[in-house]
Amino acid sequence: MNNKEIPTVIPPPAVIPPPKEYQRFNVIERIQHVILFTTFLLLAFTGWPLKYPGVEYSKWWIEIWGGPETAGLIHRIAGIIMLLNFAWHVMYLAYRMLTGRMKFRMNTTIIPLPKDVMDLVKNIMYFVGIGKEKPKFGRFSYIHKFDYWAVFWGMGIIGLSGLFLTFPVQASYIFPAWSLNWIWDVVRIMHSDEALLAIVFILFWHFYNEHLKWDKFPMSMTWITGKISIDQMKHEHPLEYEVEFDEKKEDEK
Amino acid sequence: MVRVFALSFLWLFLLSLNYSANAEPISCLICHGAIKGKIQKDKDVVIDLHVDGEKYLASVHGMLNCTVCHKSFSVNPHQPARPGDVPGNIAALAEKLSHRAKIDPVAHAACIQCHEDIYKGWQHSIHGSNIIDKKKLDGPLCTDCHGSPHYITPKNTINSPVNRKNVVNTCAKCHDQKDIAEKYNYHTYIVERYYKSFHGKKYLLGHQNAPTCVNCHGYHDVRKWDDPLSPVAWENRMVTCGKCHEGATQKFVSSITHKPIDKDNPIPYYVRTGLIILLLSVFAFIVGHVFLEAYAEIRDRVLRKKKGGSS
Image (cartoon, rainbow over all chains, first blue to last red; front, side, top):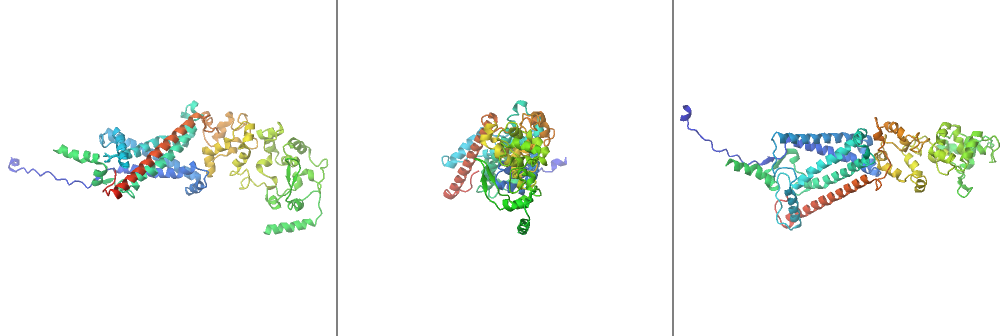
């Protein structure tokens, strides 16, 4: 056969140049993030004056948002969009898990693990000068995980109480009769106090870790491009780098 | 200024006329506009003789002669009222009000000439019955909420004490007083709690649809909540709340109270305490972590000259 006559040339193994960048977040995740922070800012700006309505600045501030009626409308619409976005995110993750596009791996998961507590202790020890080494992080450090799950907590507490406050008559259908004496106070406290917590959390935790830090200032561009440089990845997410690149090389051997 | 000149001119003009029995407001104002004094009639009764003529003429009653209400003073200079000066119904009401309205009860009673329907509502209200039936000294007369009848302006004007912007403060004059609250067994925190509720917060920010006291409790014929005629009685709440909250059910309307969040109301109290503890611990943690990390970064870069920061 002709085939035998032609010397089979085995192509040299393609030398894949190591990529310069790594796609950390895909476009859907980035869109979800943009919707999340836009609605978050709108909610914080329009909701804040209601927490301190007696202060003169609150009246001035609420006028900027078109007065209490308009600000209230913006707040409700933004809240509903935020919750829909949240539902989209959860369904998207469930879909990716169920179809096998996303796998659970110790070093890439967002789920908190015992290692995260160890990392925290190790990191604090390093900060104060007791520890010699910083912990090595995977795809998500404990800082990221805290940031992420705080939003989940907020969605549950603030989102649910916000829905009750938006639709009080409907909410009263589902509240048991014995809870009516106190449930609305609880709902109001939950919404108001946890909103304050969320705002301060974002202001300190997220802004410091993603904007103010020495090598991030004024911000990391990952939220727009979704990409992270390989150097940065090796430095900040060494365990994820091992999973994504080193392990693959081992598979090829 | 033009008005002042015009008014002075008018006064001078009227000075030239004789005092008449049926006095024009202007002729009374010649003296009462100028007098700035007060008379102590009794131990706790001080009569302010001054009437600001300009403000009076601008008020809703500005077109009325003084004697329309001050019927006892139909003769000038002031003499005791003659029989027949004060119509029977006004005299009878003045008698009922005299323990409360120590200064010219006839003038207080005279409101019913024009505002009889309102009076009928008020006399059976918790406020009116306390004065008329129970002969108590507490409870507002018309002037306590509406201000001096000489200066009443329409309720949509900003200076009116019953204007939307002022009405909560007007109610609070008594309902925020500890001694009255204790005497009648309600709580001083009602106004404070209203301001902390969503209704009150929106009201403070200037929301046009936020209810004030009167939107739920009524005003002239305001009644205690256990009176079946009160708009906040259990039987009527669904209608009252339903004005804004369409489809309000029994379960919905039973949740609104002016109860404070303290140990009498333990679940919200401990939820709030718990959330405050959570809030402060998270604050302490994140602020501490951020500052420690910032310190470590500066230390590494400046003092140890390390390349690359932390994670």
